[in-house]
Length: 248
Image (cartoon, rainbow, N blue to C red; front, side, top):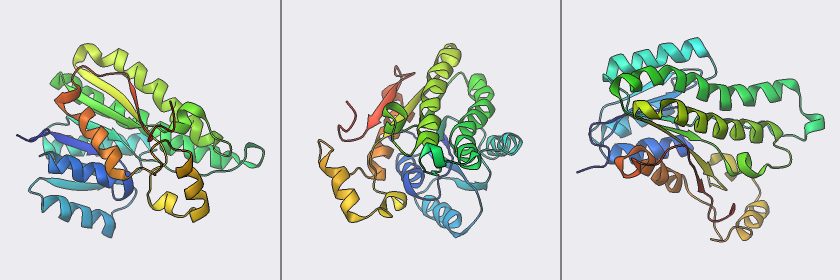
């Protein structure tokens, strides 16, 4: 029996990277997948095809996660198309790094809106559906820098720290309705984003990690699978670090 057989998962920002890895992992365990990204492009179409090839129902939705009204419409469409929503993965995120004294208001607002407001938008829209089902798992992507901070990332760190506080509050508000909420805090994960760093920087990062390697999107997806499944039925309000021991 698959861990997520016939469950419906909604994953934001899933056309590539960690979001895509989560979608594929969930599908491999029997979940039907609804996912969003900013635009309907070949990445979205390609993922739908790949997921359908795994024998599950899949559909992509073009949606700006930072737009409250658009999010509400997207979630309503997913509920209509799939009949229910069992798992929400708040994964959409961007970076606009820079030292604080050089950071523009636009850089700050963009990162807070995409990374943090999107979590508010999707969680608020999905909560009534999960409440009526009396069950649901909400998984939000934080970061080790949301716990420990990082120079040059005040906006990103603030957004990811905000997700942790938001998650703990949601866990307390909705626990009585059978809804669990947890955050995942990835460390140095090898994705398109980190691949842009020089080899020297990447080696320096790896040398500081007790497991002496960067993580993979699949490492993060495995932890999300645990949180989305009944294996974690008594886990809520927690932050699970996926960082190779970088944050202890």
